[in-house]
Image (tube, rainbow over all chains, first blue to last red; front, side):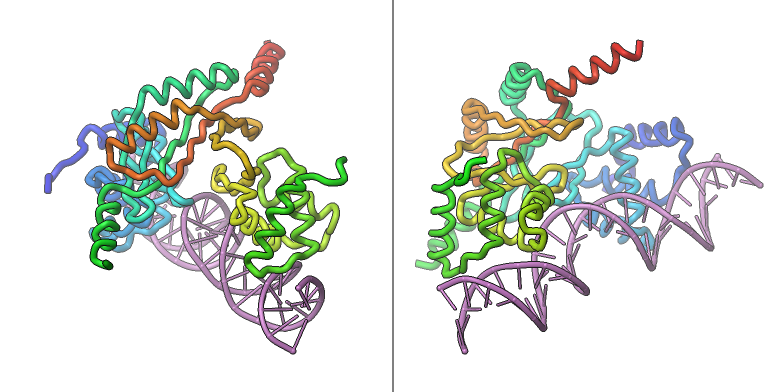
Length: 156
Length: 156
DNA sequence: GTTCCTGCAAATCCTTTGCAAGTTC
DNA sequence: GAACTTGCAAAGGATTTGCAGGAAC
């Protein structure tokens, strides 16, 4: 495990704190570090459990509040999966959307400039000014299809 | 106001009731009728308020439960707008997606076979089996842009 | 010392569920 | 009369908020 991770992001956060006359705290640093180390699309509870391994006294509320700061600082972006918030890195990342496996919950990223272009075209035709979008495709991921096929084969 | 609306849909619902050994009820009929008369993307509360004009004793729970039946019967489809369920007609309707105005909440439908095709292509490349998707584009609708421009002009 | 943070508990919002009373078949 | 429906109230899950005590500047 790397001793230091996301040096740049941490600097961005420190700057955000400074600019907004906020204060640093051990909790915020632990949460940010855990967030940066993860490559998953974390739920609040996922992140809570991770940080509590290091600091069992960190409360869920603080995780919510810190994630809000990370969003505002441009470090995290939030998506909504079946009514539950998920967070992913957003610093210097290209826009993308998500495939979500209905079986195992895996989230696979994709991006398609062609789709974005088509969206823009349709919006222009409707005189609609796009500010954001949410594009999630649900179904079965490769692994779960294989798993289902294997189970099917065994049954016979 | 037309005395009869959605004759075909009502027959579909009656058939659904019959096939599943359920029972008809005045409440269900009032709710279905109100749903069919509306061309909006109704929230549960929207629909509740409409039906309560005719039958003030209908409870929110019954609306929830009836909408669930309508979904199962293929008459309604549900979308999720900022964590709140919205319902629209689904009987004999083509698939489509939505623009949603961040200002006034208006929902504008769109469909794009090209986007669907691109989705399918990407899914095929990932060996992902699509079962459904959610594609919502947020921003400002034509009216709200005009309204904002007018307000801006006045201010000067 | 002032201002900001924290964690808890309580509140909120939307939705679902348990249950006793009422309807439908 | 058996089986299904209803409305209420209570429970549910995710998130937010009020507040008193604690930490940072």
